[in-house]
Length: 258
Image 1: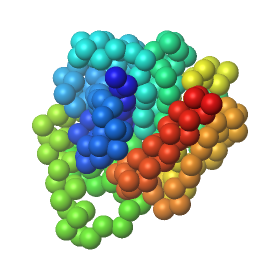
Image 2: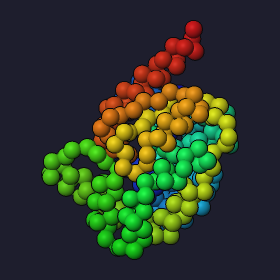
Image 3: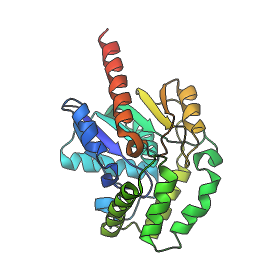
């Protein structure tokens, strides 16, 4: 049975997928869907975060083996999670069947000022100084989401995120390790050996959409652009993500049969 592995980004955990995990699983016609946490986040928050993306790959592989999921996998990954997916496909290409990468960026193909928009440097630095969980989560929502919400919807979402952050706190040391892993990650000079779909948001306030466009051109792979979503497209429009993936997979499957 096909297994989809969901990977999130910096300081986020599997619960931040929200309704998307169920929504995506329902649309994948009985395929297994498993959302993992990186060490230092979520269920693994008490562990030290790896200092490299390659070590994050090894953690994912170990977790899946322990849970009884066997490769090859299909991976849907966001931001830092997408860096992990690309590195995974380079280290163990036989384990990855397909990848859907959302709003990612990679050195050396994307310059640093596009990989993280400079206006966010101060906010990220503030995370390491300010101890207010509520303020941090409000900042993350502002940076990663462009969806219009009512005050009640916004308050309910932030309340849930604050609960997650207090139940499974991400330490300052682990934030720094994850940042270091993202900054020092360098992709292989050649395109991944597996089919890739890139999803990118034109209203992404964290990572410039030019990063995904450059990767699509360099790798000659499929790309779909969301006109109004922010960095966290599954949060802003999970139905769109699910539709794009299902459509792409169906086309790939049809092509392989012909």
